[in-house]
Length: 106
Image 1 (cartoon, rainbow, N blue to C red):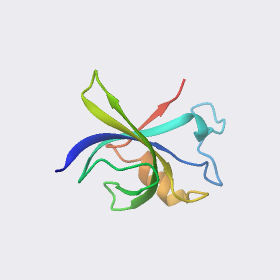
Image 2: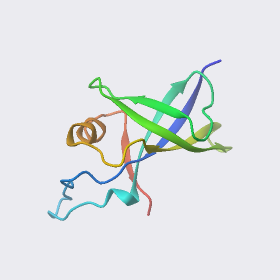
Image 3: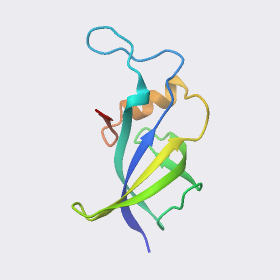
Image 4: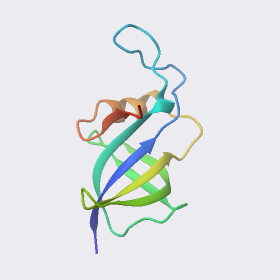
């Protein structure tokens, strides 16, 4: 039975960091990329979860935890990028995708 979940994706900083509106590097350690996705079953911690972007790139991630959000009536699945570093192309695929929203933790 498939279900919709919100994915909260943590990614590492790319080698060349993106800049904010003032020209300062953005630390992506304090940012999560969020999107509502449909999964075939609720993923368990440690499982791999491929995440699609509208440009066709697939971002590989690993599930860290899943929590029920009572107010919104859905599971929030916390994931982290599967590799140690993210390429500029994969970062751009997430950052430029209208489905994925970058949210600061603060």
